[in-house]
Image (cartoon, rainbow, N blue to C red):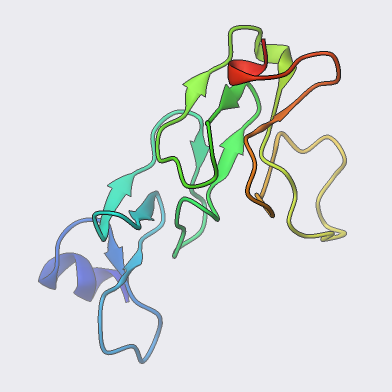
Length: 121
């Protein structure tokens, strides 16, 4: 689990039960798929789950990233124009006013109708 991985490998690592390696990101981190190292989630990235990668991390409303493989997010110029990440599941427990959703396809963060391009301007 997390305690063994953080002790043996370093902060931010995690493994699923029974795994031979600490090769996943712990809660509060995402695994950078280019460096193969965990990075702490900063403002604009929601990391409430373990095992996140750039493709599965959640981008908060009011933030934007330029692709689903990007590890950096930016605050939107007009905060209300950035809707956050697109939903990958139709989980009925998600409320319609949820402030963030999962990415399900290779595009930039969603913008409100009438806004587009970098930072939903």
